[in-house]
Picture (tube, helix red, strand yellow):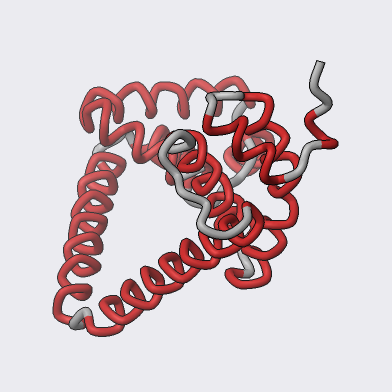
Length: 192
């Protein structure tokens, strides 16, 4: 049986061309860590460095039977890693350039539309809360707007905690029906 970790890079590349998966695994084990450090020193991002090296090895395996190693294996791998890093850096620079050139007029309507919708939704919810029976509305507002515990509400209004629980539960039922399930879920998620 062949001991792959004793083979030279040249022998490994010959076996790689012959579809030898163990030769590929040895190349991966031998160079992944070194290439990762090389990539990390350039991009300063662990995930990006890992992605660059993983993509290189995926490319190497996918094209193992056609790749021409004009120099030795280590030179090929370092050069390919460097080229991939340059592509990543170039894409980042282009992205930043376009982001900086994006006119404020494009960003502002998006934020404005979001704020308008949020304001409209808040008005609808507040209108429905105001339509609750008076005692239920007071208990509900103390619970949700002022974040008081059931015990605190019961003490202030001189009612039982069970009554507070019932008022909140009934208020939620009424709001669920009036606001619809989607609006209700949004309301519950953002008012906890």
